[in-house]
Length: 130
Image 1 (cartoon, helix red, strand yellow):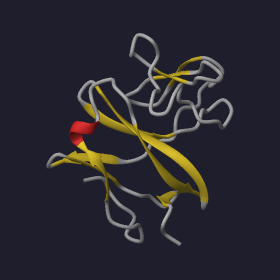
Image 2: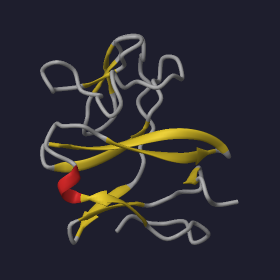
Image 3: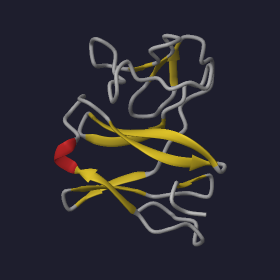
């Protein structure tokens, strides 16, 4: 389990593990980042579940081609549908494009007992929290 801010809420169930197919459609969810509403997504890549803020590092816009579709045609990279910036799915690091040295904002998730859980942080909290 990731180290968690003691003031942070407990883990939040996002979806069933089976909902995330290898290199398939992502599961989107709402978050508050620095108290501002934002979208995030979780997807399975090389057997791991990863999650990021749905915001391109080049210009802060949502990246999916269609709802839940983030991977390029070859299903090798996360690609911004607006700017073409390309990111490594396992690390969120910029591979090529206008994102430079910046990368995607990681969201802590863990898969256990057939479920995917999100671990809110000091910076990224659930929408229902105040």
